[in-house]
Image (cartoon, rainbow, N blue to C red; front, side, top):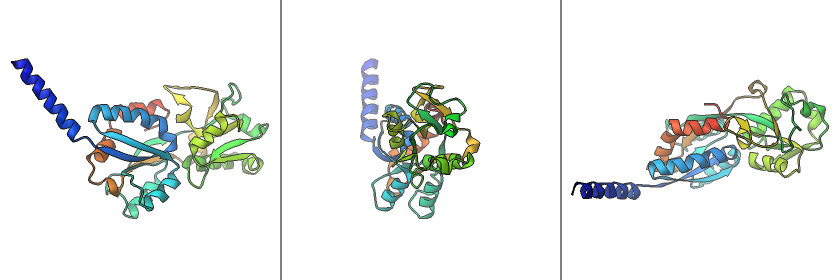
Length: 249
């Protein structure tokens, strides 16, 4: 009898959880694709809520949000865009926070092509250098800052291949359309090591910090899943996943 009672209680708890589970529509900066996919699986398992992600460039998401896109949470690749949306009244007050600090890497799909100090960049023996669009993608802006600090802007300007976002910049290199390119470390890194090709992890002092902020958008103000996701991103399980992809917290 005791077993039946506990079984009924468990069934009721599961039914209650399922009945109160919600979807949350999330605009995710392209550099955070792999981590958020891992986080989404754990988030759904732990909370019952489902994270529905769209991936793209931060600047493009800003335009979409201003034009009424149905996003409820925004995981940006910078801290300025969420702040701008906050000032313009498009976010839930007090919900903005930094969920990760990104790392830039110079990467080639070829083993041994990029040396540990990035000298390949100044050697100028390559034909194409891939970057994300600096007007819409913070990692692309950081890449231009690195080139400026190294006095290479003019030398490489005719070699640049520009992707709409960091995913496309990565694809140009992975498919061989560019010998090397600036990518997010998270795209080529897992559990303490570069997973393919060769890379130079760009020193942080060569560009402005890539502080990535999250915020609940106005459309998500009454969605329990949106609030739950923001809290989950601050928790230890999400933090461990984020760090495993080379981000700082």
